[in-house]
Image (tube, rainbow, N blue to C red; front, side, top):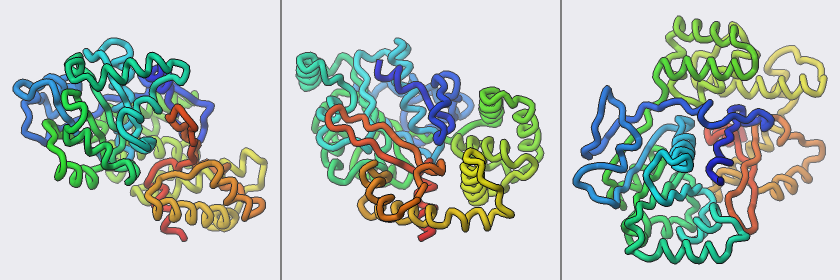
Length: 371
């Protein structure tokens, strides 16, 4: 039930009223094997189900999946868990853990993030079952989503799993950005090394059509597809789900004025969100984008300060109480209402601490550079 609940995704992260089932937004991602495993590759693609059935490796396969920011690593993990919940993956147990929320050891993380608080006796039995090595042969998969977001204080707990000192007969699949993957592979031996490369051209076309069908603007989606095929500068943007989502949003507001680089795309999406904020509150349109940014200079600088403070403490978000305190120091601040932040649910079962995060880490870093 937990994985089915999480499968309701928000394709527009700043608009929580729009939710779609994962089967409607998940598009097949091209995965390229970069290890020396015996995975069967056809046309540079890997069937994700085959990564758990590699001949000669045994039943304790460890897989690392790398990918650039926004390429779809978290959606990939959610899709695996969703497929298991519907009986499409042959495991008896699948535990999808968000690394950002790991505070203690792996067993505590499973209890905190996945198990209902009103099932204490069942929790104890399950944890006892997991600790019994003989029962680990019942095919358990632990998915670690976002090793690059793991708090430093929890790193040694996860290392125990990756170095096979605990739960040594479980399957493990971990996702991370490439730069963190290099470090992880120095301290742990992965049987399979994969990289999510991104959308193919046909995938990106299907994504655009779904996006504009959702907002009842199908003709505009077809026009964007046509312009993308003609504009070679946009080809580098279409393989990344995050960039493609932002491109769709920009095209809603900036028809005929498409960005030609990733940097320009991020700058334009900020301007789009600021204009949408003004429109929702019937505020008069400003003369140009420079005047628009000046109007919200206080909010943008405040977000830059928060981004910097979070990076200093090795975090990618801030608790709601911290944002409340911060806004109290700046009367009239509307930083959380601009659409640059979204509230992310904590998966902890006890004392959940919901966080505000930027649309993506890329925006986090962009705002840090503004201070």
